[in-house]
Image: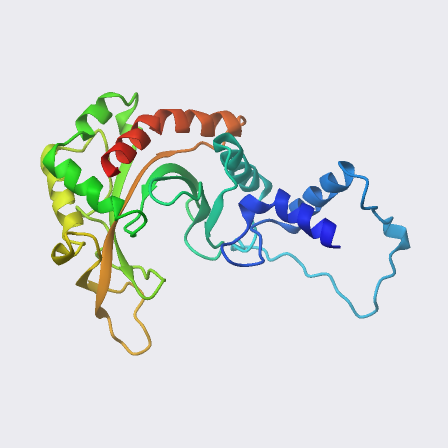
Length: 285
């Protein structure tokens, strides 16, 4: 059993939920993965179904019709996450859960990251460059913002993009409750996300100013700032507004098509966003 568990964990690593012994995969796709393990090794033998004795009183749970069950993930999503990790040659770090608005996988690096996010409600997939408002190595988000304010490079990056209308920049305000980040109404800095095509110097300057205001100037912007925020989900005690730690969170993304050539599609998006990744990384360090 230990050998089988090790092999299965290795194969499904990109689909594992963070810090949990759960995987974002349908039972039938898990069975396919398990079968492929049997087919590629000789240490573990598979028992024929006819030799299995059914335990009286057990039942098979029927599939729920109607609303989609987000505790499941179809094989195409599984292929996307696996291809992402394979193309970047990383183990990958899953984030989110299927019963949340989104889930996905990042390259696991501390600081600037590649990530792939899936939004089941809208059936959309986004490949992006991500930089969170965390300490990492001396608060790279702070260095990035201050660097752009002092000497703006975003327009050079925009000129390198083939389709500025299909690459989006989302600068958000994260509110922190211990390690959790509740959804707040003041999330989008600048009011919303923008495509590179519609971004202007005034909009970018305003977003950078709001992002910097989410960091503590008394610590030279190397720390979170306390701000009043409005919780989207009203808690039981009715405390709708709270004074919470906040930090800025940058994501620049492009849509991934669920076409036939999944691997090629992800590879194209990575190539398209590589100048963006290099710009953010260079501005941080």
